[in-house]
Length: 289
View 1 (tube, one colour):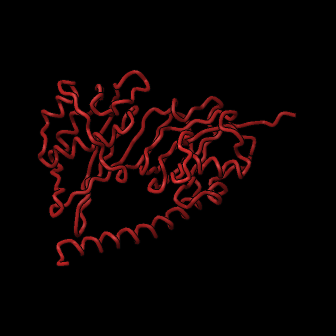
View 2 (view 1 turned 180 degrees about the horizontal axis):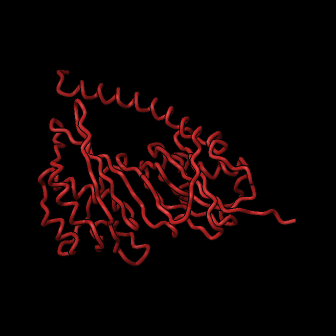
View 3 (view 1 turned 30 degrees about the vertical axis):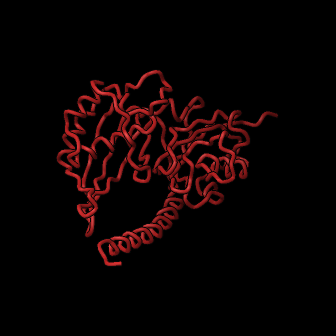
């Protein structure tokens, strides 16, 4: 008797610091390489008899993230014969810097990548006068308005990256705010588009940073978009980037409140540690050695 399968989709969050990106990379076999998010997920799903082989279950994911990039809402989908899948079950065998917090049962042909109607990233851009990282948010906002709409983002793509045959993308919105703390400030950028090229968000942040710091101006951004100049933009650091959300039509995710509570408790411990280290480092700057 053939086992009945159903399609499920999972929302996954993770801290990407200790991982070599999201996607399993078969060519990277060296034991010195750090693991991937996807690799850890596959091991957990296989251990729980939720997934045996990714090819046979029509596995898909919303988008790959690079080494060091984090996520609040990565989405994966696959078929399974296990009728008792829950986020907390999967979390019990995942490393504590990867977590599942919501589940949906979409239509049988659902594809986490192809069915996404938009993706949203958030970038935390550090600004600090004493470290020569002072950013003018007014200039950044003015330059960001030029990016909204449909453009050829060839200057914001990796030189070797042309998976779809086109670099045209539509940026739907760019919003930003400044979170002012005692010792520094952080500009928080939210960027939503119908799709992104690899490292495109981080290159956008680099371009806006150069405008915000006065190195470049709005005219340069216009030249990049109109392809009047050709430049290889250095991406902003990966550690500031978060895949914030992936949107779909007619897919309802049910969140697991218990799983979310455990995740938030874990993240608060990390926050205390890193906030303390930030103060320690800040207190050392400018001191006599």
